Amino acid sequence: MPNAVQSPLAIYIAHLKRGELGYQFSPSARQAVFYPRVIAPKTGAADLEWRVSKGLGTVHATTVVYPQQGAPYNVCLVDVDEGFRMMSRIEDIAPTEVKIGLRVKFRVHTPEGDEDPYPVFTPAEGA
Amino acid sequence: MPQGVSRGSVAIVGAAESDLGAVAALMSPIDLMAQGIHRALDDAGLTLADVDGLFCATTQARTSAMSLVEYLGLPNAYTDSTIVGGSSFEVHVAHAHAALEAGLCSVAVVAYGSTQRTVGRRAASAREFNPYETPYKPFLPATAYAMAASRHMHEYGTTREQMAAVAVAAREWALLNPAAWEKKPLTIADVLNARPISDPFTVRDICLVTDGGGAIVLTKADRARGMRQTPVYVLGSGQSITHASITSMPVLTHTGAIESGAQAYRAAGVKASDINVLALYDAFTINTILFLEDLGFCPKGEGGRFVEGGRIAPKGSLAVNTNGGGLSYCHPGMYGLFLLIEAVRQVRGQCGQRQVAGAELALVHGNGGVLSAQATTILGGPATV
Image (cartoon, rainbow over all chains, first blue to last red; front, side, top):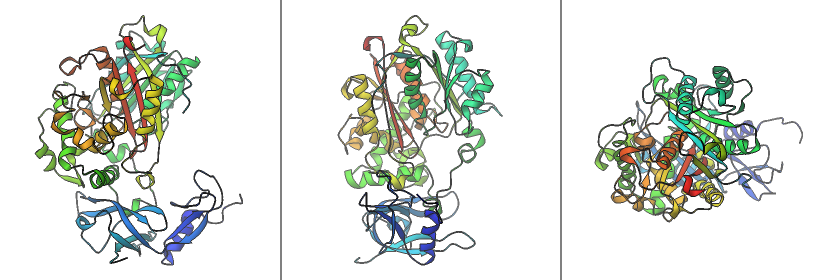
Protein backbone atom coordinates (compact mmCIF):
# COMPACT_ATOMS: atom_id res chain seq x y z
CA MET A 1 0.00 0.00 0.00
CA PRO A 2 1.56 3.37 -1.02
CA ASN A 3 1.71 6.28 1.44
CA ALA A 4 -1.56 8.18 1.73
CA VAL A 5 -1.61 11.57 0.04
CA GLN A 6 -4.98 12.50 1.58
CA SER A 7 -6.74 10.95 4.57
CA PRO A 8 -10.16 9.33 4.11
CA LEU A 9 -11.68 12.10 6.24
CA ALA A 10 -10.02 14.85 4.16
CA ILE A 11 -11.47 13.35 0.95
CA TYR A 12 -14.91 13.11 2.59
CA ILE A 13 -14.76 16.77 3.65
CA ALA A 14 -13.55 17.82 0.18
CA HIS A 15 -16.68 16.16 -1.27
CA LEU A 16 -18.86 18.05 1.19
CA LYS A 17 -17.21 21.33 0.24
CA ARG A 18 -18.32 20.58 -3.34
CA GLY A 19 -21.86 19.94 -2.10
CA GLU A 20 -21.50 16.15 -2.42
CA LEU A 21 -22.10 13.26 -0.02
CA GLY A 22 -19.10 11.04 -0.69
CA TYR A 23 -18.88 7.43 0.41
CA GLN A 24 -16.73 4.41 -0.38
CA PHE A 25 -17.50 1.16 -2.14
CA SER A 26 -15.45 -2.00 -1.90
CA PRO A 27 -15.60 -4.27 -4.98
CA SER A 28 -14.02 -7.16 -3.03
CA ALA A 29 -16.59 -6.90 -0.23
CA ARG A 30 -19.29 -5.87 -2.75
CA GLN A 31 -20.64 -3.31 -0.32
CA ALA A 32 -20.71 0.36 0.53
CA VAL A 33 -18.40 1.33 3.37
CA PHE A 34 -19.05 4.18 5.81
CA TYR A 35 -17.28 5.87 7.62
CA PRO A 36 -14.43 6.22 5.11
CA ARG A 37 -11.35 4.04 5.76
CA VAL A 38 -8.01 3.06 4.25
CA ILE A 39 -8.96 -0.61 3.86
CA ALA A 40 -12.30 -2.42 3.62
CA PRO A 41 -13.62 -4.09 6.78
CA LYS A 42 -13.68 -7.92 6.79
CA THR A 43 -11.84 -8.40 3.46
CA GLY A 44 -9.01 -6.06 4.40
CA ALA A 45 -8.68 -5.11 0.74
CA ALA A 46 -7.23 -1.71 -0.22
CA ASP A 47 -9.75 -1.46 -3.04
CA LEU A 48 -12.04 1.26 -1.70
CA GLU A 49 -13.47 3.47 -4.45
CA TRP A 50 -15.00 6.86 -3.79
CA ARG A 51 -18.54 7.39 -5.05
CA VAL A 52 -21.06 10.20 -4.71
CA SER A 53 -24.46 9.41 -3.22
CA LYS A 54 -27.69 10.58 -4.85
CA GLY A 55 -28.45 11.95 -1.38
CA LEU A 56 -31.70 10.14 -0.65
CA GLY A 57 -32.33 8.01 2.41
CA THR A 58 -34.72 6.80 5.10
CA VAL A 59 -34.72 7.52 8.84
CA HIS A 60 -33.73 4.26 10.58
CA ALA A 61 -33.75 5.38 14.25
CA THR A 62 -34.41 8.70 15.90
CA THR A 63 -34.40 10.61 19.18
CA VAL A 64 -35.03 14.11 20.49
CA VAL A 65 -32.29 15.41 22.75
CA TYR A 66 -33.37 17.79 25.53
CA PRO A 67 -30.31 19.86 26.48
CA GLN A 68 -30.12 21.53 29.89
CA GLN A 69 -30.11 24.86 28.05
CA GLY A 70 -31.55 25.61 24.62
CA ALA A 71 -34.20 24.03 22.41
CA PRO A 72 -34.67 20.27 21.92
CA TYR A 73 -33.11 18.91 18.72
CA ASN A 74 -33.14 15.80 16.58
CA VAL A 75 -30.41 13.17 16.29
CA CYS A 76 -31.03 10.21 14.00
CA LEU A 77 -29.53 7.44 11.94
CA VAL A 78 -30.22 7.62 8.20
CA ASP A 79 -30.01 4.62 5.88
CA VAL A 80 -28.76 6.14 2.64
CA ASP A 81 -30.12 4.45 -0.49
CA GLU A 82 -26.67 3.35 -1.72
CA GLY A 83 -26.44 1.00 1.28
CA PHE A 84 -24.73 2.73 4.16
CA ARG A 85 -25.87 4.23 7.46
CA MET A 86 -24.83 7.52 9.00
CA MET A 87 -25.67 9.71 11.97
CA SER A 88 -27.37 12.98 11.08
CA ARG A 89 -30.29 15.26 11.94
CA ILE A 90 -33.44 16.14 10.06
CA GLU A 91 -33.98 19.86 9.57
CA ASP A 92 -37.00 21.94 8.45
CA ILE A 93 -39.43 19.97 10.68
CA ALA A 94 -39.91 19.83 14.44
CA PRO A 95 -37.62 17.24 16.08
CA THR A 96 -40.67 15.45 17.52
CA GLU A 97 -42.05 15.03 13.96
CA VAL A 98 -39.06 12.97 12.79
CA LYS A 99 -40.31 9.37 12.51
CA ILE A 100 -38.70 6.08 11.59
CA GLY A 101 -39.33 5.45 7.89
CA LEU A 102 -39.36 9.13 6.89
CA ARG A 103 -37.81 9.65 3.45
CA VAL A 104 -35.15 12.33 3.56
CA LYS A 105 -32.80 14.24 1.26
CA PHE A 106 -29.21 15.33 1.92
CA ARG A 107 -27.94 18.88 2.10
CA VAL A 108 -24.68 20.34 3.31
CA HIS A 109 -24.63 22.24 6.57
CA THR A 110 -21.80 24.75 6.76
CA PRO A 111 -21.18 25.90 10.32
CA GLU A 112 -19.91 29.39 11.08
CA GLY A 113 -16.23 29.79 11.88
CA ASP A 114 -13.62 27.21 10.89
CA GLU A 115 -15.64 24.04 11.55
CA ASP A 116 -15.89 21.66 8.63
CA PRO A 117 -19.17 21.25 6.72
CA TYR A 118 -21.29 18.20 7.56
CA PRO A 119 -24.31 16.50 6.04
CA VAL A 120 -27.86 17.04 7.31
CA PHE A 121 -31.15 15.88 5.81
CA THR A 122 -34.61 17.37 5.14
CA PRO A 123 -37.91 15.62 4.45
CA ALA A 124 -38.11 14.41 0.82
CA GLU A 125 -41.72 14.42 -0.35
CA GLY A 126 -42.46 11.47 -2.62
CA ALA A 127 -38.80 10.48 -3.00
CA MET B 1 -14.15 -18.13 20.37
CA PRO B 2 -12.27 -21.29 21.37
CA GLN B 3 -12.59 -21.94 25.09
CA GLY B 4 -8.98 -22.58 26.04
CA VAL B 5 -9.79 -22.76 29.73
CA SER B 6 -11.44 -25.38 31.91
CA ARG B 7 -14.88 -24.97 33.44
CA GLY B 8 -14.64 -24.16 37.13
CA SER B 9 -10.84 -24.28 37.33
CA VAL B 10 -10.76 -20.91 39.11
CA ALA B 11 -13.01 -19.33 41.71
CA ILE B 12 -13.81 -15.93 43.12
CA VAL B 13 -12.77 -16.05 46.77
CA GLY B 14 -13.11 -12.39 47.79
CA ALA B 15 -15.44 -9.54 46.80
CA ALA B 16 -16.05 -6.06 48.17
CA GLU B 17 -17.14 -2.57 47.27
CA SER B 18 -15.06 0.47 48.08
CA ASP B 19 -16.87 3.49 49.48
CA LEU B 20 -19.86 4.20 47.23
CA GLY B 21 -22.16 7.05 46.37
CA ALA B 22 -20.51 10.35 47.21
CA VAL B 23 -17.03 9.57 48.59
CA ALA B 24 -14.78 11.76 50.73
CA ALA B 25 -13.37 14.88 49.09
CA LEU B 26 -10.20 14.38 47.00
CA MET B 27 -10.34 10.57 47.03
CA SER B 28 -8.77 9.32 43.79
CA PRO B 29 -9.95 6.44 41.60
CA ILE B 30 -6.86 4.49 42.66
CA ASP B 31 -7.65 5.18 46.35
CA LEU B 32 -11.00 3.50 45.72
CA MET B 33 -9.39 0.55 43.92
CA ALA B 34 -7.02 0.11 46.86
CA GLN B 35 -9.86 0.34 49.36
CA GLY B 36 -11.80 -2.30 47.40
CA ILE B 37 -8.72 -4.53 47.22
CA HIS B 38 -8.10 -4.24 50.98
CA ARG B 39 -11.69 -5.18 51.78
CA ALA B 40 -11.87 -7.97 49.18
CA LEU B 41 -8.61 -9.51 50.44
CA ASP B 42 -9.95 -9.30 53.98
CA ASP B 43 -13.13 -11.02 52.77
CA ALA B 44 -10.94 -13.78 51.28
CA GLY B 45 -8.64 -14.10 54.29
CA LEU B 46 -5.64 -13.03 52.21
CA THR B 47 -3.22 -10.08 52.31
CA LEU B 48 -1.60 -7.95 49.65
CA ALA B 49 1.54 -10.09 49.91
CA ASP B 50 -0.46 -12.94 48.36
CA VAL B 51 -1.38 -10.93 45.25
CA ASP B 52 0.63 -11.40 42.05
CA GLY B 53 -1.95 -10.52 39.39
CA LEU B 54 -3.62 -7.13 38.89
CA PHE B 55 -6.49 -6.54 36.46
CA CYS B 56 -8.02 -3.07 36.48
CA ALA B 57 -9.74 -0.33 34.52
CA THR B 58 -10.98 3.21 35.11
CA THR B 59 -11.74 6.10 32.77
CA GLN B 60 -9.75 8.44 35.00
CA ALA B 61 -6.26 6.95 34.57
CA ARG B 62 -4.88 6.26 31.10
CA THR B 63 -2.44 3.68 32.41
CA SER B 64 -4.39 2.37 35.36
CA ALA B 65 -2.38 -0.85 35.83
CA MET B 66 0.79 1.23 36.07
CA SER B 67 -0.84 3.52 38.63
CA LEU B 68 -2.14 0.60 40.66
CA VAL B 69 1.19 -1.27 40.60
CA GLU B 70 2.93 1.86 41.90
CA TYR B 71 0.29 2.52 44.57
CA LEU B 72 0.40 -1.04 45.88
CA GLY B 73 4.15 -1.50 45.44
CA LEU B 74 3.83 -4.70 43.39
CA PRO B 75 6.39 -4.22 40.60
CA ASN B 76 6.38 -7.86 39.50
CA ALA B 77 2.63 -8.34 39.32
CA TYR B 78 1.14 -9.77 36.16
CA THR B 79 -1.02 -6.92 34.81
CA ASP B 80 -3.91 -6.41 32.41
CA SER B 81 -5.79 -3.13 32.03
CA THR B 82 -7.97 -4.05 29.10
CA ILE B 83 -10.69 -1.43 28.78
CA VAL B 84 -13.86 -1.96 26.76
CA GLY B 85 -16.16 0.20 28.86
CA GLY B 86 -18.43 -1.15 31.56
CA SER B 87 -17.93 -4.79 30.65
CA SER B 88 -14.14 -4.55 31.13
CA PHE B 89 -14.35 -6.48 34.40
CA GLU B 90 -16.18 -9.48 32.94
CA VAL B 91 -13.41 -9.55 30.31
CA HIS B 92 -10.84 -9.30 33.13
CA VAL B 93 -12.38 -12.36 34.80
CA ALA B 94 -12.01 -14.30 31.54
CA HIS B 95 -8.41 -13.11 31.19
CA ALA B 96 -7.65 -13.87 34.85
CA HIS B 97 -9.12 -17.34 34.37
CA ALA B 98 -6.62 -17.96 31.57
CA ALA B 99 -3.71 -16.33 33.43
CA LEU B 100 -4.33 -18.37 36.59
CA GLU B 101 -4.64 -21.58 34.63
CA ALA B 102 -1.44 -20.81 32.69
CA GLY B 103 0.40 -20.12 35.94
CA LEU B 104 1.11 -16.47 35.05
CA CYS B 105 -0.19 -15.53 38.50
CA SER B 106 -1.66 -17.36 41.49
CA VAL B 107 -3.87 -14.73 43.17
CA ALA B 108 -5.54 -12.28 40.80
CA VAL B 109 -7.33 -9.12 41.81
CA VAL B 110 -9.81 -7.33 39.53
CA ALA B 111 -10.29 -3.71 40.61
CA TYR B 112 -12.21 -0.57 39.68
CA GLY B 113 -12.50 2.97 41.01
CA SER B 114 -14.27 6.14 39.90
CA THR B 115 -14.96 9.54 41.39
CA GLN B 116 -17.39 10.44 38.60
CA ARG B 117 -19.93 12.11 40.87
CA THR B 118 -17.29 14.22 42.64
CA VAL B 119 -15.40 15.42 39.56
CA GLY B 120 -18.35 15.47 37.13
CA ARG B 121 -19.22 13.09 34.33
CA ARG B 122 -17.43 15.15 31.67
CA ALA B 123 -14.17 15.25 33.62
CA ALA B 124 -14.38 11.55 34.55
CA SER B 125 -14.79 10.31 30.98
CA ALA B 126 -14.10 12.89 28.28
CA ARG B 127 -15.72 12.05 24.95
CA GLU B 128 -13.40 11.49 22.02
CA PHE B 129 -14.15 13.66 18.97
CA ASN B 130 -15.80 11.66 16.20
CA PRO B 131 -16.06 13.65 12.94
CA TYR B 132 -19.03 11.54 11.82
CA GLU B 133 -21.06 11.95 15.03
CA THR B 134 -19.88 14.83 17.22
CA PRO B 135 -21.29 17.61 14.94
CA TYR B 136 -24.84 16.34 15.63
CA LYS B 137 -24.36 16.74 19.42
CA PRO B 138 -25.61 13.31 20.48
CA PHE B 139 -25.92 13.27 24.28
CA LEU B 140 -23.79 10.17 24.69
CA PRO B 141 -24.23 7.52 25.75
CA ALA B 142 -27.97 8.18 26.29
CA THR B 143 -28.74 9.20 22.69
CA ALA B 144 -27.24 5.99 21.31
CA TYR B 145 -29.30 3.75 23.59
CA ALA B 146 -32.35 5.95 22.92
CA MET B 147 -32.07 5.27 19.20
CA ALA B 148 -31.80 1.54 19.85
CA ALA B 149 -34.92 1.87 22.02
CA SER B 150 -36.70 3.72 19.19
CA ARG B 151 -36.11 0.69 16.94
CA HIS B 152 -37.31 -1.75 19.60
CA MET B 153 -40.51 0.26 20.05
CA HIS B 154 -40.98 0.50 16.28
CA GLU B 155 -40.41 -3.18 15.52
CA TYR B 156 -41.91 -4.91 18.55
CA GLY B 157 -44.36 -2.42 20.02
CA THR B 158 -42.36 -2.05 23.22
CA THR B 159 -43.86 0.75 25.32
CA ARG B 160 -42.58 3.49 27.60
CA GLU B 161 -44.48 1.85 30.46
CA GLN B 162 -42.68 -1.45 29.89
CA MET B 163 -39.29 0.28 30.00
CA ALA B 164 -40.39 2.13 33.14
CA ALA B 165 -41.24 -1.24 34.72
CA VAL B 166 -37.52 -2.08 34.56
CA ALA B 167 -36.68 1.05 36.57
CA VAL B 168 -39.45 0.33 39.09
CA ALA B 169 -38.25 -3.26 39.62
CA ALA B 170 -34.67 -2.04 40.11
CA ARG B 171 -35.89 0.45 42.71
CA GLU B 172 -37.83 -2.22 44.60
CA TRP B 173 -34.68 -4.33 44.82
CA ALA B 174 -32.64 -1.27 45.86
CA LEU B 175 -34.98 -0.69 48.79
CA LEU B 176 -33.84 -4.11 50.10
CA ASN B 177 -30.14 -3.20 49.76
CA PRO B 178 -28.70 -0.99 52.51
CA ALA B 179 -25.79 -0.02 50.21
CA ALA B 180 -28.08 1.35 47.47
CA TRP B 181 -27.98 5.04 46.60
CA GLU B 182 -31.73 5.43 46.07
CA LYS B 183 -33.86 5.14 49.21
CA LYS B 184 -37.37 6.14 48.09
CA PRO B 185 -40.05 4.18 46.20
CA LEU B 186 -40.57 4.82 42.48
CA THR B 187 -43.68 4.36 40.31
CA ILE B 188 -44.15 3.95 36.57
CA ALA B 189 -45.76 7.42 36.50
CA ASP B 190 -42.69 8.87 38.26
CA VAL B 191 -40.47 7.47 35.50
CA LEU B 192 -42.68 8.71 32.64
CA ASN B 193 -43.09 12.19 34.15
CA ALA B 194 -39.44 12.73 35.02
CA ARG B 195 -37.24 15.20 33.12
CA PRO B 196 -36.81 14.11 29.47
CA ILE B 197 -33.19 13.51 28.41
CA SER B 198 -33.20 11.82 24.99
CA ASP B 199 -36.52 10.37 23.78
CA PRO B 200 -37.85 7.90 24.83
CA PHE B 201 -35.75 8.19 28.02
CA THR B 202 -36.36 10.39 31.02
CA VAL B 203 -33.74 10.75 33.72
CA ARG B 204 -35.32 7.73 35.50
CA ASP B 205 -34.61 5.44 32.55
CA ILE B 206 -30.91 6.22 32.97
CA CYS B 207 -28.33 4.88 35.41
CA LEU B 208 -27.17 6.91 38.38
CA VAL B 209 -24.12 9.13 38.46
CA THR B 210 -22.23 8.07 41.60
CA ASP B 211 -18.70 7.53 42.82
CA GLY B 212 -17.57 4.02 43.68
CA GLY B 213 -15.27 1.11 43.14
CA GLY B 214 -14.41 -2.31 44.40
CA ALA B 215 -12.50 -5.49 43.81
CA ILE B 216 -12.80 -9.24 43.50
CA VAL B 217 -10.11 -11.84 44.19
CA LEU B 218 -9.64 -15.02 42.15
CA THR B 219 -7.48 -18.07 42.60
CA LYS B 220 -7.37 -21.66 41.36
CA ALA B 221 -10.13 -23.95 42.53
CA ASP B 222 -7.94 -26.31 44.58
CA ARG B 223 -6.63 -23.40 46.67
CA ALA B 224 -10.09 -21.77 46.85
CA ARG B 225 -11.61 -24.80 48.57
CA GLY B 226 -9.64 -24.28 51.77
CA MET B 227 -10.34 -20.58 52.09
CA ARG B 228 -12.55 -18.39 54.27
CA GLN B 229 -15.52 -18.03 51.92
CA THR B 230 -17.53 -20.49 49.89
CA PRO B 231 -15.80 -20.48 46.49
CA VAL B 232 -17.79 -19.07 43.58
CA TYR B 233 -16.53 -20.85 40.50
CA VAL B 234 -16.05 -19.30 37.07
CA LEU B 235 -17.91 -21.76 34.86
CA GLY B 236 -17.84 -19.94 31.54
CA SER B 237 -17.21 -16.64 29.79
CA GLY B 238 -17.98 -15.09 26.44
CA GLN B 239 -17.48 -11.80 24.69
CA SER B 240 -18.49 -10.03 21.51
CA ILE B 241 -17.65 -6.50 20.37
CA THR B 242 -19.99 -5.60 17.52
CA HIS B 243 -19.08 -1.91 17.07
CA ALA B 244 -17.73 1.17 18.85
CA SER B 245 -20.14 3.93 17.75
CA ILE B 246 -23.88 3.42 17.47
CA THR B 247 -23.85 4.24 13.74
CA SER B 248 -21.92 1.01 13.15
CA MET B 249 -24.08 -1.29 15.31
CA PRO B 250 -25.10 -4.05 12.87
CA VAL B 251 -28.72 -4.43 14.09
CA LEU B 252 -29.96 -1.98 16.72
CA THR B 253 -32.32 -4.49 18.35
CA HIS B 254 -29.84 -7.41 18.48
CA THR B 255 -26.79 -7.07 20.73
CA GLY B 256 -23.53 -8.97 20.99
CA ALA B 257 -25.03 -10.63 24.08
CA ILE B 258 -26.49 -13.21 21.69
CA GLU B 259 -22.94 -14.32 20.89
CA SER B 260 -21.30 -13.71 24.29
CA GLY B 261 -24.16 -15.52 26.02
CA ALA B 262 -23.94 -18.50 23.65
CA GLN B 263 -20.20 -18.77 24.30
CA ALA B 264 -20.66 -18.60 28.07
CA TYR B 265 -23.53 -21.13 28.13
CA ARG B 266 -21.49 -23.51 25.99
CA ALA B 267 -18.43 -23.21 28.22
CA ALA B 268 -20.48 -23.61 31.41
CA GLY B 269 -22.63 -26.42 30.02
CA VAL B 270 -25.83 -24.74 31.18
CA LYS B 271 -28.82 -23.01 29.58
CA ALA B 272 -30.89 -19.96 30.44
CA SER B 273 -33.55 -21.97 32.25
CA ASP B 274 -30.89 -23.33 34.66
CA ILE B 275 -29.92 -19.84 35.91
CA ASN B 276 -31.16 -18.83 39.39
CA VAL B 277 -30.13 -15.17 39.52
CA LEU B 278 -29.19 -12.59 36.89
CA ALA B 279 -27.01 -9.49 37.02
CA LEU B 280 -27.54 -7.56 33.77
CA TYR B 281 -25.85 -4.26 33.03
CA ASP B 282 -28.78 -1.81 33.22
CA ALA B 283 -27.22 1.47 32.11
CA PHE B 284 -30.63 2.22 30.56
CA THR B 285 -34.01 0.56 30.97
CA ILE B 286 -33.89 -0.81 27.40
CA ASN B 287 -30.71 -2.75 28.28
CA THR B 288 -32.46 -5.15 30.64
CA ILE B 289 -35.12 -5.83 27.99
CA LEU B 290 -32.52 -6.42 25.26
CA PHE B 291 -30.36 -8.69 27.42
CA LEU B 292 -33.30 -10.79 28.68
CA GLU B 293 -34.08 -11.46 25.02
CA ASP B 294 -30.52 -11.91 23.77
CA LEU B 295 -29.54 -14.22 26.64
CA GLY B 296 -32.55 -16.45 26.04
CA PHE B 297 -34.91 -15.61 28.92
CA CYS B 298 -37.68 -14.63 26.49
CA PRO B 299 -38.08 -14.55 22.70
CA LYS B 300 -36.72 -11.60 20.67
CA GLY B 301 -39.16 -8.72 20.83
CA GLU B 302 -40.96 -10.02 23.93
CA GLY B 303 -38.72 -8.33 26.51
CA GLY B 304 -41.09 -5.43 27.10
CA ARG B 305 -44.06 -7.68 27.78
CA PHE B 306 -41.82 -10.00 29.82
CA VAL B 307 -40.93 -7.34 32.41
CA GLU B 308 -44.53 -6.19 32.95
CA GLY B 309 -46.34 -6.95 36.17
CA GLY B 310 -43.28 -7.07 38.38
CA ARG B 311 -41.83 -10.26 36.88
CA ILE B 312 -38.23 -9.15 37.56
CA ALA B 313 -39.07 -7.30 40.81
CA PRO B 314 -38.44 -8.82 44.28
CA LYS B 315 -41.68 -10.82 44.32
CA GLY B 316 -41.45 -11.78 40.64
CA SER B 317 -40.56 -15.11 39.07
CA LEU B 318 -37.09 -14.11 37.78
CA ALA B 319 -34.52 -12.43 40.05
CA VAL B 320 -32.76 -9.71 38.03
CA ASN B 321 -30.39 -7.07 39.45
CA THR B 322 -31.03 -7.84 43.08
CA ASN B 323 -28.70 -5.05 44.31
CA GLY B 324 -30.90 -2.42 42.63
CA GLY B 325 -28.73 -2.20 39.54
CA GLY B 326 -27.05 0.73 37.88
CA LEU B 327 -30.46 2.36 37.87
CA SER B 328 -30.90 2.53 41.67
CA TYR B 329 -27.90 1.08 43.55
CA CYS B 330 -24.68 2.51 42.15
CA HIS B 331 -23.24 3.56 38.79
CA PRO B 332 -19.82 5.21 38.79
CA GLY B 333 -19.47 4.99 34.97
CA MET B 334 -18.22 1.42 34.42
CA TYR B 335 -20.59 -0.72 36.44
CA GLY B 336 -19.47 -4.22 35.42
CA LEU B 337 -17.53 -5.00 38.60
CA PHE B 338 -20.61 -4.52 40.78
CA LEU B 339 -22.51 -7.14 38.77
CA LEU B 340 -19.82 -9.65 39.74
CA ILE B 341 -19.81 -8.62 43.41
CA GLU B 342 -23.58 -9.04 43.71
CA ALA B 343 -23.58 -12.39 41.91
CA VAL B 344 -20.83 -13.67 44.23
CA ARG B 345 -22.83 -12.64 47.30
CA GLN B 346 -25.99 -14.26 45.94
CA VAL B 347 -24.22 -17.55 45.25
CA ARG B 348 -22.69 -17.43 48.75
CA GLY B 349 -26.12 -16.72 50.24
CA GLN B 350 -25.04 -13.47 51.90
CA CYS B 351 -27.69 -11.10 50.54
CA GLY B 352 -29.96 -10.81 53.56
CA GLN B 353 -33.42 -9.45 52.72
CA ARG B 354 -32.80 -9.65 48.99
CA GLN B 355 -31.31 -13.17 49.00
CA VAL B 356 -32.66 -15.42 46.25
CA ALA B 357 -33.38 -18.88 47.64
CA GLY B 358 -31.16 -21.56 46.08
CA ALA B 359 -29.01 -19.14 44.10
CA GLU B 360 -26.49 -21.70 42.92
CA LEU B 361 -26.04 -20.52 39.31
CA ALA B 362 -25.65 -16.84 38.46
CA LEU B 363 -25.42 -15.17 35.08
CA VAL B 364 -23.51 -11.88 34.94
CA HIS B 365 -23.76 -9.79 31.80
CA GLY B 366 -21.59 -6.74 31.25
CA ASN B 367 -22.14 -4.06 28.62
CA GLY B 368 -19.60 -1.51 27.43
CA GLY B 369 -19.72 1.57 25.22
CA VAL B 370 -23.02 2.04 23.38
CA LEU B 371 -24.25 -1.59 23.37
CA SER B 372 -20.77 -2.20 21.92
CA ALA B 373 -18.78 -4.62 24.08
CA GLN B 374 -20.84 -7.47 25.51
CA ALA B 375 -19.32 -9.91 27.99
CA THR B 376 -21.05 -12.73 29.85
CA THR B 377 -19.76 -14.61 32.90
CA ILE B 378 -21.48 -17.62 34.43
CA LEU B 379 -20.70 -18.27 38.08
CA GLY B 380 -21.65 -21.24 40.22
CA GLY B 381 -21.51 -22.51 43.78
CA PRO B 382 -19.94 -25.77 45.00
CA ALA B 383 -22.86 -27.88 43.78
CA THR B 384 -22.18 -26.83 40.17
CA VAL B 385 -18.64 -28.20 39.87
